[in-house]
Length: 274
Length: 304
Picture (cartoon, each protein chain N blue to C red):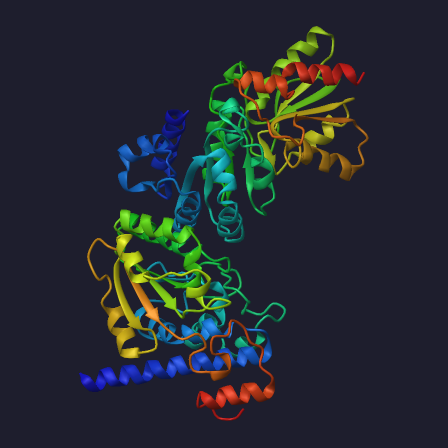
């Protein structure tokens, strides 16, 4: 059992590393929201390679778990995970922002296979996920709805309308994950403080866990444990580092790497030349 | 109106299991649906942004939600959610302005005037905009919305202004103006609650020997180009709406006329780039701001 858990952890960590490598390659091709993409790489690896029920051959499969990236500017990480999961070719990733490519600058359901909801304007994803979870419940179905939010994004008031509604309607098929990387264009707590954040979610009626968003065993354990309480939506505050894994992107919102920077970043991620 | 809308929604919900209702503090509209299908009627409180987001999410799951709020708030407060989550998102959501179309709230204050609803909704690609004149058109608008894929905005006129036209003669086709009165001298076009003034003007003009064609332009988007082009063959077109004249029905008609190079004069009655700020009743306000049959008659007589 231990061995298989270790194997799972190692496998997911490798997927997370490859997501980061893809994000860096994208940043070598075009402007890229590196910081927030790198901070969610571990979460996405666990979701797409262990937790979410999805069918890359049939993205609109009725039985799928829904995943909504509310922080839509971090779609480079999501596109990487989707390509690696087989929704489309990984070769497409470096066509980021190119004419008619499948990889857009903000999450776009119209162009990228596997993306259900177009996002980019912050504060939309949680409400949409509440509606999706209500729709699933109307069907008496077992699909779960995962939504990944940025921490700065929580300054948008619509999130708290949605948080209230999710608890009121007892949506235990809904899981909100907050990428608590502490930075927006500057330090979040200086710009508009969110603390005490876990307590806010609790006060809104959610069941809350706080984890290290880069510790794979913790991520897996918490995602396997949802819903934390029957009749309540689950919130996971994932403490992360903006730019995790790539020193050049630490606390950066956006990067465009030259060849030398890209090689340095790839080397840091243990990726061989080329 | 809430009851009438609710009964109609329930009727369609019985036929189509995808139909559900989401209320933004407008629960009265959903009581009939809730009584029969409790799980398909959802109250979300006073939160327009969340209303539209939740409706979008229900559509992600394949539902056909009717999302109901008050006209001024459900079009302005959550404009970006409607534009992005429903328009860009291609969601099959029907946004219903349930209370307070146009300037119905009159002296209750400009906060409650929906004088931008047509313009805002018309701006959004793929959005169909329907402003029914009365209960008859409302029922048909709901049916059309349920039967047509894509985002809709329907402003309920409140049912306060029944148009006194024999039921048997009425027709409703989405995207086609309804002829309420035949006439070849001038054309008067109304939309929503203002349509009754157009119809009344038709009678007043007849007394003066002028044959006015009166149209209910219930579908403002897509605009009925054929009806506008036919109107351009009369000597004057007057539009009337409880809306700022910028961006509403008058603008939509002007766009068609200008594009085809029709030289027909157009008079746009409505709020002339002002807030209708006054204390008084609905009829008082309409008189003061020239949204009446008499104002139409004046426009027609003045143009001779």
